[in-house]
Each structure stands twice: as C-alpha cells, then as structure tokens.
Amino acid sequence: MIPSYWIHPEDAVMATAYHRTVVFDCQARVSEDATVVAAQQRSLLTRYRPEGGFRAVTPENSLYRAALSQIAAVRLEIRGHRAKFKLAQNCPLEVRANIVKQLRTRGRPHDARAADALQWAIDRDTER
Figure 1 (cartoon, rainbow, N blue to C red):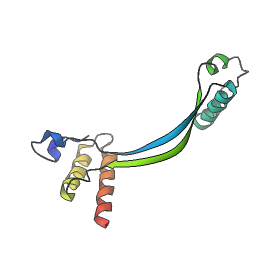
Figure 2: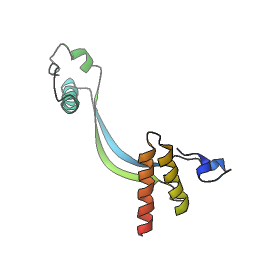
Figure 3: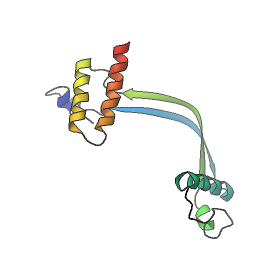
C-alpha cells in the first residue's frame, strides 16, 4: 500500500496497493477415506517435520483414528492459470521511480520487496 500523495499531492484516489497475482483454475478432488487422508498427512509431515519425533500416521493407529475421521484430503489438479501484475504501469517512469525511492525510504516489512517488483517493471518497460 502506498499513500496517494506519493503520486499526487491532493488526489486521494491515487492511494493503491501493488501486487503480482496468479489465479489458478483447478479441479478439486476431495477424499474422506482415512487411508488417503493419512497419506496426505504423512506427506506434509515429511516436508515440515523431517526430523520426526511422532508416531506413524496410519488409520489403524488409535492416536490418529478420531482426527483422521474428521478431516478430508483435497487434491487440486491445475487446469489453467492467469497472472496479473499491478506495478504502477499506468504511471510515468519518473513517478514510478519516485514510488520505488519512497518505498525504500519508508522501510516497512514488505516495502523492499514491493520496490524490487516495481523496479523490475520499470527495467522491463525501459528495455522494450
């Protein structure tokens, strides 16, 4: 998010949020089968808890039986996607460069990343 006065001293409409977004069109498959749910949970644990330290997740394990009966496994098959960038493309280059400078000066947690994205868009437009 940037304040409007970075672009225009009086026009409040100029306040905006910059983003790079990808929207995925998916076919979802939902399973409540305890074997499928347990397999999905094991996959998550392998990724996020590789050090272990827990009992094996199986439908037969009494520790997990109740939990596995209350959750579902969702598998998404991506059918398509579309990307949208909103990086001040509608502003003149000098205004965009000022926004980059202001973001770097302000220094909020996501400002450097936003400034890098806007700079990428500036560089891309000037190369054309």
